[in-house]
Length: 271
Ligand SMILES: [Zn+2]
Image 1 (tube, protein in one colour):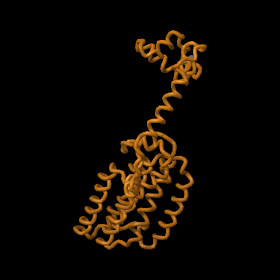
Image 2 (cartoon, rainbow, N blue to C red; image 1 turned 180 degrees about the vertical axis):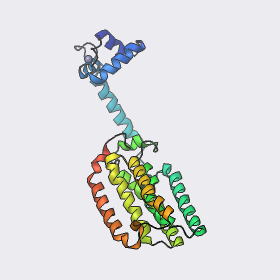
Image 3 (cartoon, rainbow, N blue to C red; image 1 turned 90 degrees about the vertical axis):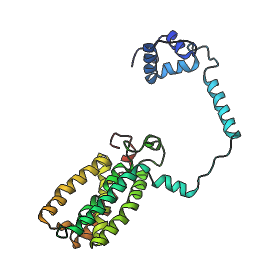
Image 4 (tube, protein in one colour; image 1 turned 180 degrees about the horizontal axis):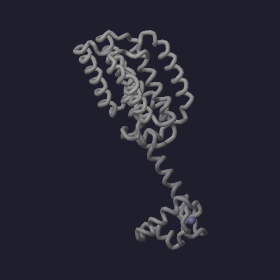
């Protein structure tokens, strides 16, 4: 902590008509952040014996005046249900990413029609399709209202799950449609998609959702998509018998993520 400012400096800091040079102002403010004793001196006035009008009395008068004005004002407007649902589930900053994902899936369907010898691109892309949306669903960098929402009780895992549900509401029908156009089974499209979403949230509890999504997406591209495109064969993890494994994996990862809910309440740089 810096040294205590002189009573004269504190008095000038508290006096709205006095002017302080910037260096003193800055040093007093920095000190007040850490020193409860000086903050207390400031509240009761520079002279501890002069418990004057600028102290707690003033704060009480201001609080009473605000209460009176709130009571005299118009009653609060209750929002309609659909507007609550819209605010909770839809985040407009997600829209471009969802449009991009749907466009990529549409390209995969077209490419599949043009090059039937390729392994099913929709099946290969389905697990990573929700990842761009999930990565930025609850992101400090992409949501302009992040800091406001982060201070509310609805923040954290609840908000991430709501936004993820908003992403899946768009991605799942798009995947189902793309799968039906290319003849991929619904289970092999949707279960890997849900498993990867759960994995992103589970790993995201430890390293941050954005990093988890980037890592999983890159890992899937290198370990599964690239070999499949090079060998022109669908890998074993996407063969028809693998659906129960994907379902089990989804449940296990969702269970793990549920136990790590507290990690999403921290205001870390991971978000
Ligand atoms: Zn002090």
